Length: 313
Image 1: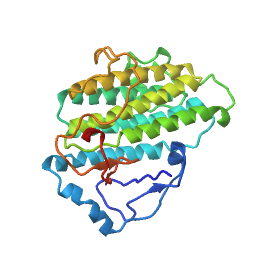
Image 2: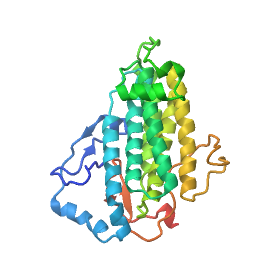
Image 3: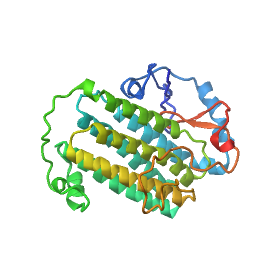
């Protein structure tokens, strides 16, 4: 049984905790978010000493973590879709809020981060993912907002057929939930792994923790795009999926390079990466001992029972 705790940032409403029904897959998580109960003020207070006793650097990081909490809670809520049997349409329905989650995380880094290289990368994430959102919506023939149309019209990298119009889809396949099942299973696995790998022990270093969370988030997008390449049908969306994979692998390498982490053996340089099987996880070990904390399904910081951590071995 998987339990997910979702908590809105900054405020302590009467119903602080939200959980899912017991489910065997991430699809259950995304499709059955239900209120599970509330927490007493005493229970809330019991969780506060981890922050109250923290160093000034962890206290300074709190607003950054709060914004990431909100971004992930919104992303998961918006990714809660009812499968239609149309693989391409459901790929877009889930990838658009996933991209928006990355945009929100990047904006938090722009607000609170200090590393100039990472700030430039965060700006690129915002720009590229806004363009990709517009391109995906255009590929489905959705009506674009003026800003989305401007992004495609001004983007030299956008596919020619997407720059100035939103053509109707030519694919008339009959939607099939049975045919879509392998695609959904791969997305389930990708999102489950992403959330597990985004479980980090905060270091108080905003830039390093940004990388620790954004790397597995990017890897989740890569895995989703690979599922579209395997099971999707729309040629334009497949080209966009390929661009997502290339762009996000490059950004993963650049982010790791910016905080002094070694690159995977199959990546020769951050500006000329191959296509390795990237892994998420923590970006470096904490420089000081802190109470173990867990980024749960909604990126909420909560106490975690003491257990060996990868960075402690």
